[in-house]
Length: 189
Image (cartoon, rainbow, N blue to C red; front, side, top):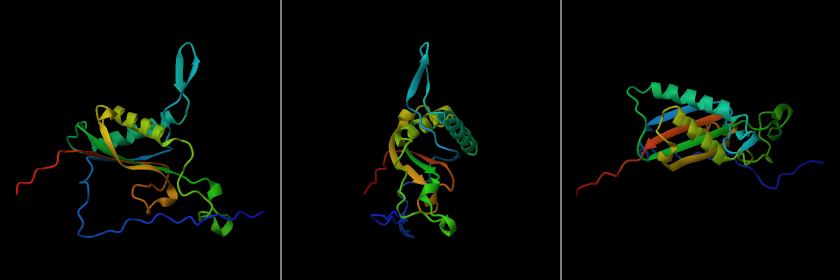
């Protein structure tokens, strides 16, 4: 029996670029590109004698990947000091599509029309955010993730959106951008 899609799945359309338009935000205070499979942090399970361990085996290697990439990015900035004050963050998580989302034969590189547009399955976005923010604390990017008061671009995308959606990588991982939120300057008239 052949599967017939109920609706067309269009690729995301990038925002038009206006040459004279000023960017909404200045360059980020820190940008980190992490390569590796994002792992969620959240649920723990009891193993006896009051010992609790992470339910996900992916969280430890993911946090190590984030710490390594963040330390490397931090060291490239001369005189980098831990970020302080209120912060805005972008977290763009990239995942490979399952093979079942792709065509077969000569269409092996084409996404099936019935494939979902975005990864709406586990791991939970909130648990990915938690593991990544905690790893940035460990890496010395900021004192505590409580400094994050605003999210800009936040979500999970498939790597097939690389080049179409800002921050989406060509392999599994995450693009992290952090900005200091500063008081608006008063303009005297």
